[in-house]
Amino acid sequence: MNSLSRIYALANNTFREAIRNKLLYTLLGFSVVMISSGVVLATLSYVEVHEILQDTGLAAIRFFSVGIAIFVGIGLIHNEVDRRTIFTILSKPVSRNEFLVGKWAGLTFTVWLLLALMAGAFAMVSLLAGAPLGLDHFVAIALIGLELMVVVAIATFFSSFTTPMLAALFSIGLWMIGHLSRDLHALGQQSDVGSVTAMANFVFVLMPDFEVFNKTLEAVHGLPIDSGEIGLAFVYAVGYTVCTLILGAMIFSRRDFK
Image (cartoon, rainbow, N blue to C red; front, side, top):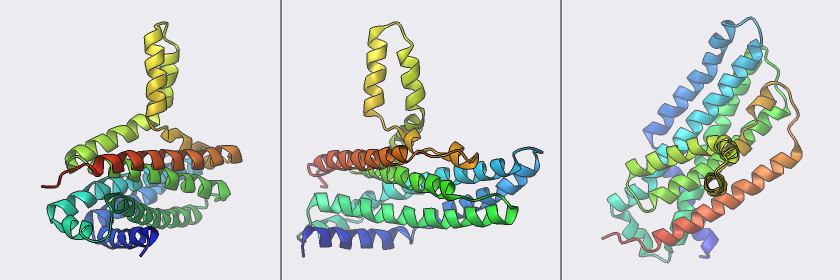
């Protein structure tokens, strides 16, 4: 069995484990409720009714899918260590790097599947409400899928060396910072202090930029989404994910489970 086969087996096992998590279905249920609640919120306004409905729906998809990625992801490695099953897995011809990548791949596929279900609910609610649906809406949802790939990598990274509670706090914090990093960078550039500007540049390069995946405004208001920005988002997602997993693998390979 080659490395890809072992990673696939681990990913498949992770997927089966993740879909048995009750928290996953709880968050999925709340997401569908929030997507549907956009109809009620839209009735409170006489203008931009469809825009409010779809903006609420896409926001719910992003929020709850990230929640699933973090709160399900942080426990995957911890559960293996806590149940001591990791010793059984690593006693086989499976490296720690393959174990980490397999966990990431399995959870990424899981959240993508749930994202597709949320997208289906979003499309159904939009059609029932008479809101227009176009390719840009599905491009915006696909970009959320790329964001989730990075979020899962971050959650896997933190869970490789710390407790689930700390991994959750770090992952949530980094996700929030990632959506504010552009604004923080812009504020830093306006400073007259050179050290502040330099620090802002350093933080902007180091922290993830999740706004590169946020095309909700364009999709909701029918604005064109540049194909170059889509390509940049894809390259950024792959690059940040690979770097995060490499760093996580380096730490995980030195972790003592005794």
